[in-house]
Length: 444
Ligand code: GLY
Ligand code: MN
Ligand code: MN
Image (cartoon, rainbow, N blue to C red; front, side):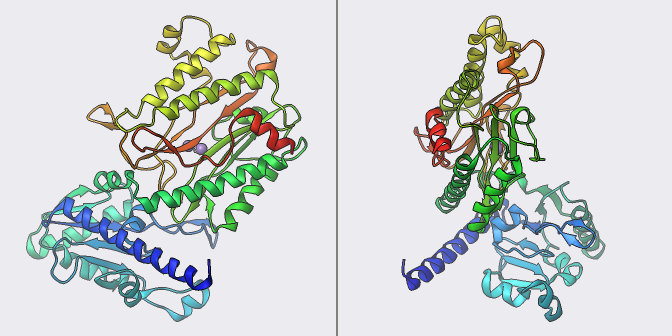
């Protein structure tokens, strides 16, 4: 692409995103109606140690509606307000602060660049916000998530109540907003596909360099390298677990040596432009699966493939898990790690000893994304535009009753799957999972 084409492409992307943010605001305002106002607080900066903060990351709901990334801000949406529906409170510009920490939009910049109709300095919120919401019957906002924010809402209402006897009902906005977020637009899907591609390249790098005697963190370094090359960051703490560490589901210390003959399980994904990828691959450190590792790998892979095929419009969310449970139980029975009839092993959940987590979760702006899994006590049906992970696993501890060669094998295979009519669309398909292909990558 030539320089000018690249520039035009970037401008088009920005315009498209602005249209999308506006469409979302209109949609949520339509849902709540003209008797209501919506208030969304931003994320809180968080201290890491002493005067060092964690990297600030805007709250997903806040970003979803605005694209505005600065802390100390708050969105107010007032449907059908003649003077404008989108109001933002944010930090004022401050030359000295900007010298240290970088540019601040300020109210004028927010109006100019984020399609805000009215913007005010955050310091004026107690004075201005109660007036904005004074005639509303309903206030939609996150409830019981941020105590400081809950307190502020109560104060603003109390303030109004004293002056003009107004007492709006507070309703959680999360269900409405999160149901919108569950359905991904074309532009969201294309970012997620890219986030998956970046993570896939990193997984391949790890397979290419792995050797007995390396440390887990040396493989982790490959992910940091690849993610930062694309201005992405980890979407969660990566798991790089060799041998028995692969059996610890939330292992994140990643500081052990990788031993000849063991497998390594890597669960790592990135966040790109506020969208997460989440991929797991498991492979032999010396490049060759042992017969027992091969057996277990094949069970997990069959379960994963069968579960992916269940990600179809109209199927229940639980169908991938049910089939994964069946195949894993059958497989463990075939190799003698479970004994009894298939139906009773499933009924008694005997598989829980080796497969103790669910098969998937929604993924999007958050790695464990928002959206209900049940509707009126029934599993939700898959609909086009939803994205779920499919990640069955088998984890065999170092227990006396387990034949020696099966001990300390932990295997999970995880992909991200978009619901698309009858054909599951695997967003993370760019990284191999067939046993022989994996061995070839490591060998070469
Ligand atoms: N990496 C988190 C998960 O797989 O759920
Ligand atoms: Mn996952
Ligand atoms: Mn994962």
